[in-house]
Length: 435
Image (cartoon, rainbow, N blue to C red; front, side, top):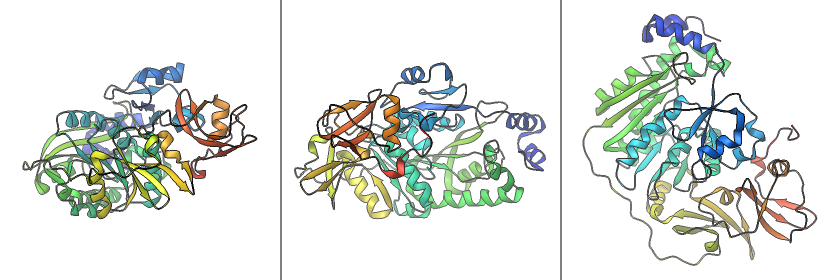
């Protein structure tokens, strides 16, 4: 549905011909694209998984391709294993920009994804991190922050922190970040094809309100970006007021050099539509590191569950692990922000028992030989993911890691005649799994 007056309005930004192609493109079926998690599966292996559905590569992403039609991702165990992310192709251009920045940037790069939910850009960014790099993924709305935390846990890369803070809270972290991503809340013109509410709520007045709010968000977070650092500003709109004019405002009012900008438009580019600008903050302040925690470590019952380089910490009955190299930075973040996820939840201590956490199974921090494994077929994997009862025939009692196509899904405790499912109830599949 195209809002009344939209064509005339957008023609002011794009011109009549481009506006006409855009309107035509918005009337077509939106493309579907997926991006592999290189820590768990290669792009070639993911193509093999999708078979005849796998189509052309997304030209600006190394790990992504289009699908010829949309399958039921909910009924695909690899989706729940964090093997891939369903992401709109245009927005993957942020990952393309980041790849160059991180490769040419300082060791121990610190990145903030300020408006990160549901997690497309953050999972893409996490896949680019080195062992000493840190990503903070933030979402101000609590319910969306929970979804973000779950998606980051499924992706399984431990150098990440998820926060639920207002943008202004980051001002206290002066010069902390080398790169800031601001995929700003916008008037949603790129959502018209899949969200009727976005079309119904659109108006020129809404555009003006969004442009002003975007500037406020940018100004709030600006002190957290060090001098000489980079900001990637993006929206899913097409108009110049929220896009080019706000990029120019960052340059002139906040103090930055505009390096480049690009529009992705339905009808011209294969995607939902996207705007992205790369800027460099004026000045040249050296990158600095927060000190790590003391090298002294106490023995932990979870040590044997983790790969090298992770520090187990006990929080009440929960044992979690954070990368040693990031311990000081994470400690600082936890003192300044509302952190809802950092490191990896490893296990719960219950008396003498160590109960493995669901997130541990999905994390690259997990040492794969720690628990015996059972490979599941698709039907049984879906029963596990729906928390339906099933039996591990012929297996001894105890904890098992369940896998599908050799990728971990989660843990169960086998009791002989049944299994205790350790998948959180909030993550279970709620649709009919017999399809």
